[in-house]
Length: 224
Image 1 (tube, rainbow, N blue to C red):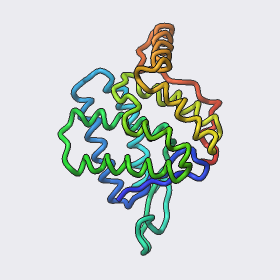
Image 2: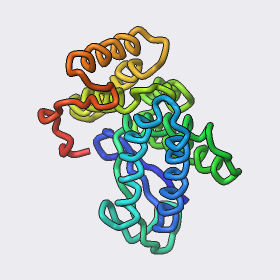
Image 3: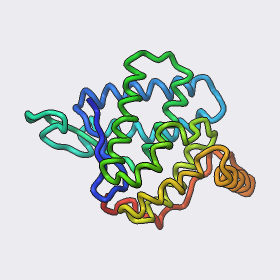
């Protein structure tokens, strides 16, 4: 079984599981978002960028290239366990994009159970880190972020950079709900940022899918 725990400084979560758990998870999520991409729906390429970055970390985890421990969180006996880290922003946006992509695939009971398992552990990790701060974040697990956003990757990248620059800790964690409003369709922040991306794409004479940010000033390597 996969499980999540908060990172020490509350920047995000650690995803843990056995090699088999993580391989199954990787295969499942890859099938979902590649299936949507084949249908050529609007925004599919952008969600592919988001979910590819998520699945890449899962693959690195089961290959043993990220976190390792000799015991599992859910078992008393020694059991090799592998893991990786995601910021809260990356995890929440990836969950939203994954749930949206799953709308275009046939879902088995196991697939549904996998998503419910992710939601459960993500919420548990939030409450474990800061019960008070978690109360305002739960809505973003349950659909507050718009997975059908055609520029979901850019939204994640910019919001994530803003969050990382807060430096971690409970103060940053409790600021996260306000930052995530930008990803909630219907909010002024959502449309203001879409307007910004539209103007930037026009200025640079490129597609919004091709936009990225200059984040050399963001210290992603700080302690999590």
